[in-house]
Image (cartoon, helix red, strand yellow):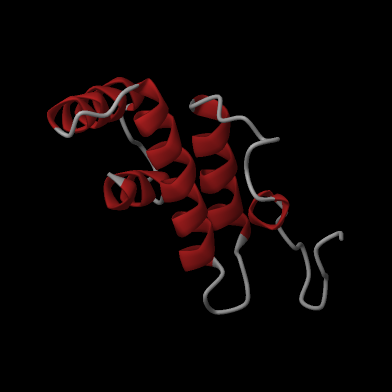
Length: 97
């Protein structure tokens, strides 16, 4: 489920409804629930952020895609890792502590 979300977060146009239905079906077959889907959404998004930052630089396009994904899915920013939702703008910027 996490890999599916991570891939969707990196695409320009994902179908939110289809993504949620797919995750819900996987969760149902695995005896999961809505919390399982929400956890997969958050973990997949974080994985996508980590993938985008693997080279130490995140492009404006990558940042925009990740923010749009987070916002469209109404993910709770307070539940996300603060370092995962902070995007450096310039080389040398450091996340707030």
